[in-house]
Length: 104
Length: 391
Image: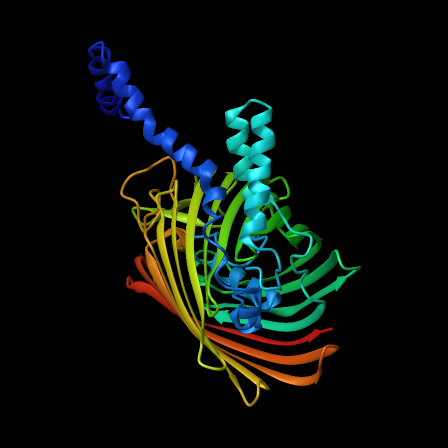
C-alpha cells in the first residue's frame, strides 16, 4: 500500500484520544442507531401481526403459470449461462440455481 | 422461485408462533435469546398445511449450437428429473460441447484446434414443510481442464407463502493443464455464496433480489494466452486471487389474459476492478389457447476493464493480461423462443417442442485486431432445439 495513504488513515487517531470526558455518552448515542436497528429486527415478526399476507392463495393462479418463471427450462438456461460466463467478466446472482461452470 | 402453491396458513398463526417463541425464551431470562427466537420464529415457523413444491418430473433432450468470432460449439444435452415420493426428487444431466476454435486470439497467436468438453451433473431435492433443500454435484472434463463442483441450496417460504428466502453455497475444484506440456499442472479453487428474496407483490407481480459473492484462488488465467508489451507477445500473468460481488433485481408481471413481461438489472464488481451492468427486458405470450408460447427478449451488457488489462503495455508489470473477457466492451443480445405443445393429456403428461434463437453482438473498446489495428467486434448466433416432456 502507498505509505502516504497509511499515514493519512492514521491521522484521526489522536483526535479520538482528545475527546472530552463526556465522549462516553456521545459514543453511546452513536451506538444507539445500531441498538435500535437490532430491536426493530427482533420486532419484525411482531410487525407481521398487523400485516397479513395480502395476496391470498386463491389469488395466485396467474403467478403459478410457467410463463412467470424466469428459469422455465433449466437445460436451456444453463446453456445461455455458460455462453455468457466464458465471454463476460461478470458472473453470479443469476436465476440459474447452482451456477459455477469452472471451464476455460 | 416464489411459493405459488396453495397456502392455508395465515400471518396471524405465524405471529402466534413468533410470540410463543419469544415468550419461552424470556422465561429463560435472556433478552438477546428472545430477540433471536422472535426473529427465527418469524422466519422459520412453518405450517404443516403448507408445503414447498418439488420440481416437476421431466425429461429434456437438446441440441445446442454457438457460432461466432471464429468459434463453433455444438452438442447434445440431456436432463432427466424424477421424484421418488412426495419429498424427494432426483436429477441427472449430461452436456457436450464440441468446440472448433479459430477465434481472434487463436489465429493471431496459435493454430486453430478442436476439442470436446463433457459435463455430468446429478442433484437431489428434498422438501421439508415449507423448505426446499437441494444438493448437487457436477464434473466437467476437457483435455486440458477438469472442473468439479458441489453445491447446496435452501429455499424457505415465509409470510404465508408470499415470500421465499433462499441461501446457497457452491465449492469448485479445478485442475488446469496445458496441451503438449505434460509437466504443466496447476489448480483453481472457487467458493460461491448466494442469497435471495422473492416476494409476491400483487396477484400479477413478483419481484426478487439476489446477491452472490464468488471467491477464487489459484491459476485463473489461460496458459495459452499472451499479453503484449510494446507490441511483443509475453506470457499472460493474472493474479492468483479474485473476489467478486453481484447484486440483481428482477420483476415479472402478468399482462393481459395470456402474457407476461419481465425486467432485470444486475450490478457486478470485483477485486480486479471490473464493473459491469446487465439489463434485460422480455415479453412472453400464449397463442392459440396456449398451444403456442412465444418469448422475445433484449439483453444489454457493459463492463469496464480489469486493472491489469491492456491492449498493449508500455512497461513490464507483475500482472499483465490481454484477455478480451477482461477488457472494456459491451454486448447486445436479441432473442426469440417458440414453444409448441405437441401432445398433452391433462394431469398426466405433456410434450413440448422448443426452438430458441439469439443473436449477439460484442463490441470491444480497448481490444484491437492486431492485423488491422481497429477495435475488434464480432457477431454470434446461439441456437437451441429441444423436446421437453413433463409427466
